[in-house]
Image: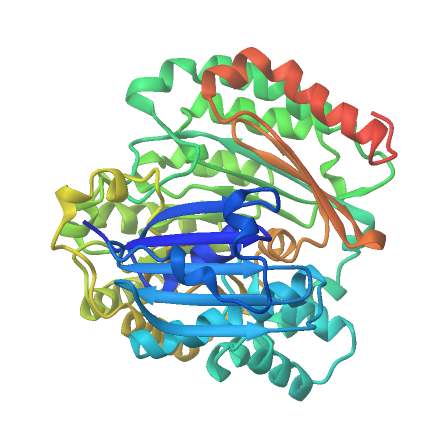
Length: 510
């Protein structure tokens, strides 16, 4: 049984903000959440600045109880452990603007939990995906680095180390984006939801070939219709980047892959595209013919992703290939002329320690890829590591922060510079994912998707289009269904969703 956390929210609904922050301090926590509105009887008993009946709502049977009265411009917070008060915070006449109010509440909760568990969090109260976006925006406002440091420390309780990392990455992103006319462009993402097998840590829209491969032809029929539509959507803008991800796009057979590449060539305005990426992540999906097809059709960047070079870990997480196949696939890609290759690794994988990561890095060093992306394991609800956690009990990774330090040192030693960063919920030790690249080989699409500076149209099952309104500091999303069979059956509806949005909201004709 994990840690049981009772979260009682009176007034403002801050469940989505509080859950990840609490879980960062109390990994594995299970939540019981109650919301009370102004008209609720429970609410009427606590809405008083002069009394403290919040005490009545702490259940001594729970490991922790959070009782939070969040009114328009004041709040009361009480936190209990096994029914005993461990911290409280009261504030009156505070800024009622949502962001400022949220940050104030989060800081108070953070300080209480930091004292309780005996340590802070490297990113402070930041639990969102894009911590560098804050720094990027401050740089664009003309704020000095010292001002940014002070803001990250006081407003977000971010550690100095992570702030410096964020500044370095945001400055590099800004330099790269200033070199391209991203404001007058757009990008396209194409999702291929097939994989040779589904990895134990994976929660992406992904379907194993053995069970769903017979649907690949029908999927490409539907996807072709959507790609054809995307090619007509923004005639007044320049297509900046194209990214084919998944899943594993190279899980398609050679004929299917060529069909996809030909569809892209025939229907998208590729003449001015500055980056064309295809994930060839699983070495057991790669053949010489596929690699040559990618090169022949103008793909400029690929990924071949080991995740680890330890065979026992590959077996444990369900990647049914050998470490030797990773080496062979990489060398084959080089022989086919691919000169911008990314390799992903994951730190915090089941059963691994820092020395395992050092071994993986030493093997990658021999291959000398152009990019290195370091992911920290995130335990997703839909992944087998979570749904079948009894199977992996006692095999948790140890020393994940030390693993991260070793990757940082390796990147610096081998002239890989950090250029983008993002985070996910439930990451090991509350860390981050960092993309490193040799100068001039950075993945531009990665920066565009992280900083949300450009509209990205998306095709495929589970794909989500993001429409950026820069003058309004607003982003709107239009999602496709995740189910493979639903997407095939309803692709016209997916196209219609985007057409309606473009016509009525984005002021573009399709």
